[in-house]
Image: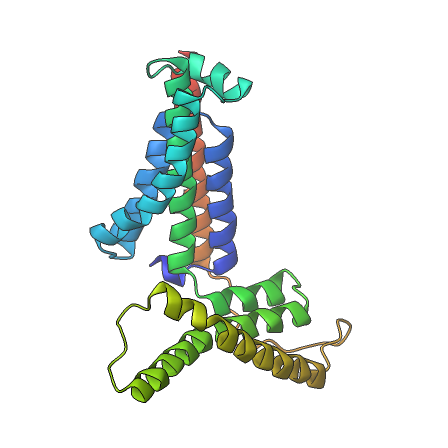
Length: 248
């Protein structure tokens, strides 16, 4: 369902939710944002619960650094301490640290929702069509999207060629030495592709003052507006509940 939402509408909504997570220093609001992001992936996108939990792990590790810094080393900001006094969850240092910990997960999960439900090509076309992204930047991003999987394929071909030369099957996961030996050939491959891409972009005449036709740009629909209004209303309601609870 979220995959059908216009990329720019989804981008604006996700940025607003991240801003809410950053500027409203409240643990329960962070938990609410995490829950909404998880439910969006599980219920609307039918993603596995294990996948959603796995997505939280790197953000939790990142947030754990804030928690340990706050609790063990007492290196939190004055703003965090002031907000922690208003919403105590134990000591001031622990309260500030746990909110920062949850904030890292909340912002990461909102970003994950956008990344997992948005087609990169559609996003670039929408930026070019609606937000006047320069064609040179747009086509460069398209070239990068094509280059990343090609580099992975090239690395696999190099590993297979080396394995055939040695007469044994390649390892499923390359070791540190094998990974280091792939750097130079993959760098040479990337440079060749970048040179060809630059020539192709130059041949297209990507001047900014020339009118262009963008094929396949996603159009705005009524459902996109409904999604944006409901999402922003939910964010406003969550802020109102937090402010009302804090003032009470």
